[in-house]
Image 1: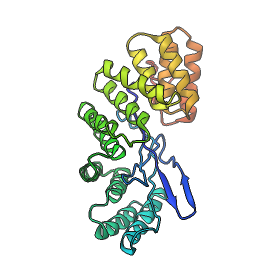
Image 2: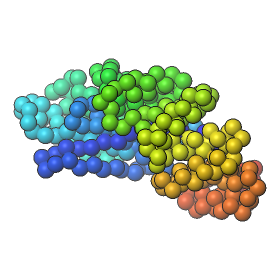
Image 3: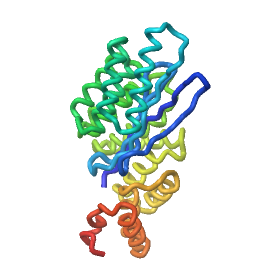
Image 4: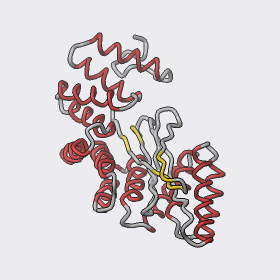
Length: 290
């Protein structure tokens, strides 16, 4: 019942102004790519790595034409790479990103996009190499450091991911610290560091009261520590904050079962099966045959 969410978000600046978008591909995952440059951000969101439930969003690239032709050409390739990522053309994403790297070998955005494409293609180790390279090139960028921390946590290295979130939070220009705090709290929970998890998650919720990552992790933390009523409150807030995923519904059912409301527990199970038909069992010992 470990719920782990990692969040990243991105914006794109174009000639006609700024637009923000989120893509929700792949079953239960939202990925957001976080860019490193001051003008662009790339972010990822991820959920419960142990169960394979993720949320991933896509990345934004600054394509303003206020620099020299060479730099503008690199941005064109990055924009194309981003567009191909959104359409699921991962080989095309890598191809365009590598073209950008030929122009700018230190393009953090290019490495981040390649990491996203590799990860979605199932080349997990390669994705980590790209995220790590991006972090090496931008060692003080909150978004990039957050991304690498997310990858580490998703690979079962929850404790090792925490210093990367700390470094992300040390970036005074990082505009979405609630994300890194929520990620840090979720990963600390997974690492068995409940005290740190509680601190990080409460700080995240203080900054962003509707942060679904932090709310879901707090619901799990309270439930794990035997405070079912408190867990219910956070679970209900989590379900109100964003579309439900399988794990949020499973945890809600387990909380209600613990509180003795079997009817409510059954409703969550039924909803989980209806919305996620691949679910095998409810997690309450019935093997999916209730």
